[in-house]
Image (cartoon, rainbow, N blue to C red):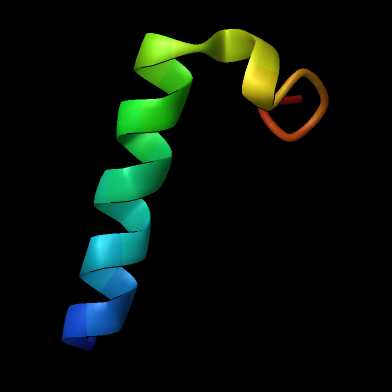
Length: 28
């Protein structure tokens, strides 16, 4: 994984843990 990939994953994780409403369908 590149640094960009890792950053994207970390940002995604931070968003879903902070606001699940941001990704209502992606998690499923």
